[in-house]
Every structure is written in C-alpha cells, then in structure tokens.
Image 1 (cartoon, rainbow, N blue to C red):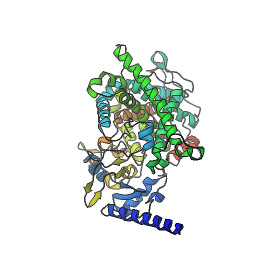
Image 2: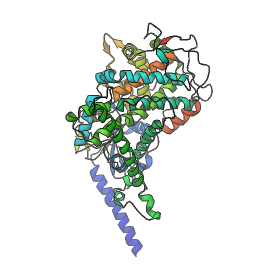
Image 3: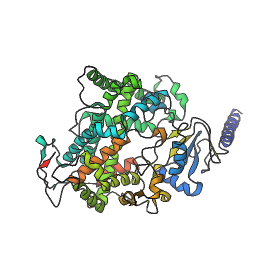
Image 4: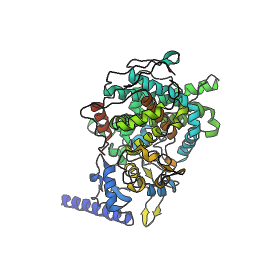
Length: 533
C-alpha cells in the first residue's frame, strides 16, 4: 500500500511539474519538445552550438529550451541578440547563479561572471574607463610589443633570452619545434603579458615559470566550475546548506565546497598581497611604471572600490585574458599552417611595415590592413567560445509575440552568428580575410555595417561586452605580425589538424594541435641580420 501511495505521489509531482511548465512556457518561443523533469538536457552534447544552429532551420532565430526547471533561450542571429542583449541591456545583463564558481570560489568578485548589482557596476565602470582603446595603446603598447618580441624569439631559440643592445641576428631555422613547446610559449606569452598589464610584473622568460602554472590552474578551475552539470549543487541548491563536515559515505556531497573555499582562500590571499605591493609603491611615490592596478590605486576616490573588489578586478585582467588569448593564438598558428596563401600574403603585408631592418612596432599596426583582416576572420571563423557567455533576464519581457520570463537564461550562439549567410554571404563557412578588405567609394559592404566594429560577436553584447577587448586585439595582432615578419609556419606533412571540422571541442582541438601541428619557424628566402630592436 505504501509503495502505491509513493508511486501516486511521484506521478502527481511529475504531472504538476509538467502543468506548471506548460503554463509558464505557453507563450515562449518555439523549440524542440523535452522530457518531464529534465526537459532538453538529454539532447545536449559537446558541440551544442552546431545542434542549435541546425535547429534554427526548423524553429527560427530564437529557440526555447528547458534544462530541468531552468528556461533557456538560444539566440542564433546577430539581429535578435542585438535587439535583446544590446538595446535592452538594462534587463539582460545579469549572469546565472553559479553556487560554486560565483558564490564560493570567487565570492561574486570576478568581473566576467559576477552577478548584476552595485558591486558589478562599480567594477565594470573602473575597467571600462581604464581600458579604452586610446588608453590601451598609450599605456600598454610597449608592454605588448616587448612580450611579442619574447614570443617570437622564444619560438626560435629554446633557451633564448631577449636580444642585448637592441640587436638580434636571425638565421634560417632548420629544426622543428615540438607542438607542446610552441603551445607552452603561447601560454608563457599571455601569462607574462597580462600579469604585466595587471601589476607591472617583470617579463616571464621561462615556459616552466610557477606563475604560468598558477594562472593556468585558476582559469582552468573557474572554467570547469562553470560547465553545466559540473556540480550537483547547481541543480539542487539545497546541498549548499549542508554542513562542511559529513560522514564519509556522504562527504562527496560537500567536497566541492571544501575545494572551492580552500581555493578562494589561497587565490584571494595572493591577489590581495600583490595588489597591496602595488598600492604601497604608489603611495610611497616609487611606482614609475604603468599598470591596471596602479590606475585603480590612483583613482581610488573616483571608483570607490573596496580592497577586495580592487584586488579581484585587477586579477580579472589576467584570469579572463591569458587563457582565451593563448587559445586564439593557437588557432591562428593552425590556420596559418593550413592556409599557405593567407600566410604568404600576411608575411608580405608585415614585411612592408618597415623600410629598414627593424622589428614591427605598435605604430605600424594601423598600416597593415591584411594582417588585421586575418585576425578578424580567424576570430569570426574559429571563435574560442562558440556559445558565448550566458545572460539572465532580471524581469519579465515581451519580444514580438513571445514572452520571456524573469530568470530566463539567454545564450548567444556565437558560432551561428559568425557564420550567418544572411550577414556574411554564401561563403560564410570559408576562411576568407578578403571579406574585410572590400571597400567601394569609401563605404563598407552592407553586411559589415550590420555587425559590430570587430566583424564578429566574440566579445559579447550590451553591458556585458568584454572590457578587455582592446588589449586582446592589440596583443593578438602584434604577436601575429611579429611571427609573420620573422618566421614561417609549416604544418607536419602527415595527419594535419582537420581545421575544417566544425566541431571545436576545446579538449579535442588542444589534443589535436599537440599531436599534429609542428610549425617550423624561419625564412626560406632570406636571412635577417642586424635587426634593430
């Protein structure tokens, strides 16, 4: 009898859940049917951006899903993303509640995933004003150039040090760098660059420097913590209220909390310590170099950030920038190896930047249109994050004939937007930098006016747009020009990366590049001697 009662209660709960779900989604956008309780969770996979793009043909530009009780809307075109996330950013600028990543591991202090509110607004204002395009070029151009020189030099010489007395003798390279080697050089470059910009830390010369491991460890931890389904507590928030100590059979239920709290204590101590050193030097008048942390200290009265907020905001610079920039550069090297014609034209463009045997400088970059086009096309064609970061509605809204409930997650399908044939033309799936060079009587192509300045949507939308995008653009362009100017990238003859495969699972692409890409860096046709640094 008790089993029958329990069965009736379970079926009743499922029926009630289903009826409530139907009521709440009665005017929601169309989408694939889901199952009771779990909704569409069973349909997701490691390449969900491709799945969502295929659903566009059946359900339209805006698609509704249910991930358990959580309503989710997929935005497949730039037009609908612009209408909602840009034009209505006042109500679509929150982030999802992440108990592990946001509330426990970072205490809502990491800018990219922090929840909407007064703290986030203060931190964003400080970052936005400190990282404007003109400010980045003036304050950090030389830092970017210095680390780009170290990157190009490191790719050539396994144990090299920067050129002394402003000179460097270049020889034709005949050795092949092992893939893990060039990937580690990219990680060294981005870690060195973004910690220098954040805190004025001296350049990192070794690919095995402990600071690199620390930066990569933190970014990896935060990234894993944001994965859907990574932690049971995200689906059952009541687990957050369990005591920190449970008997061994149940200890797995709170292991995430112990790990996240320990990590927060460790990283918070490091962030506050390094920020305090910058603060002390500024107040003593002995800090003569520019850094993001120095700006925050000097503008303390203007931004009114607490010590915790300022130290975590400075840390957000390298946490957000180092990993994504390294991944972008890795894809660029793969692309250059795959498309030899593009590499040759890029090299020619980089060569004409200088009339004398000297390294390209940041001041040369505006005069390199083809190199700029290669960067924009690479970011469009192979976005590091094909699904972008989620937004959350803070109130009910109506979009056309559809209702969007408060608390709905809106997920921009960056992959679909960047390959939209209605915007980029029928060749949207092709890698074609020339699409960014076409001009007619001073006007860009009509489609180019419809997308943002970058030519892609990788940096996000509305008030959640990446505040460090100008640093990212400058660092990627400067390093690529330096490599194109000095060296030649060659693929391994056998088993090259299938760069045309639309599945860009992060683990797969990293593993593939380690196995198959062996760039040889050097000049076949000339030897560069007496280079003036």
